[in-house]
Image (tube, rainbow, N blue to C red; front, side, top):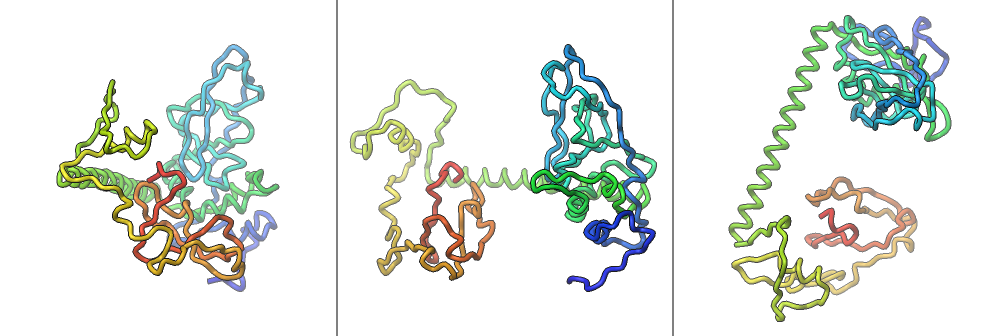
Length: 335
């Protein structure tokens, strides 16, 4: 629901940017105090001069809140920017350019003592005010990413975060005890989700093995090297080696038949009409459109179904009747 009028107290006007003022606060539980980020983050400015004969670690801050990782190790003579900043474990890092895309994270043991350019910010965290992992948890929220976007400006693709605007953002800050409880509860749910995902994969494996047993399919060991392979002449439909070898990977106690023999119609509906349709001839009509990007690999699950105008569809298209079997001929290795 959009508000017709928003009121901001003068004492909270850190700058005159309307977008920043409207987007720099959480809709939150009122029992928690709102605290500026700048009250528990202090900029790290440990500048060093890069020396040619010294090896340095460099970091990468992954977007979408995927944390910080070691990028590489480089000898100083191969580093162009000779003025850089030294970071240490436990500091909060963000990318000036990609903060709006969730490029935040905590420095780990792996990157302790690494260097960063002026395109990154590193902050000491006041652990007497905020639990570091609670801060990380806050940065994963969509609301926090909106703050980062509101605090960024510049040309498209090169928008940089304004540090002052960022540090002026207020977040709800419960007591340290409650922060730790929230982090522990969140982590326990993540651990449960990971266990359930592992169990689901094990169950999928059991189901596959059950099907193989029932169908009498012998599973080939693809890692096992074979010096010689035999193919029966009666089974030869094509002469290319890769097809001949792949077609014999399925071995079953039951008769094998071509898929073509169980297909009633191909690229035609049950009334023998072509399924092909040129959407460009219907530029203003609305179509429910499935592209490769809308299908989940391995499972075939439909991720989304877009409604688009005919003129927006650039690919060749076909109508898909109910109960027809759909497969992607582009990138078939995605299954």
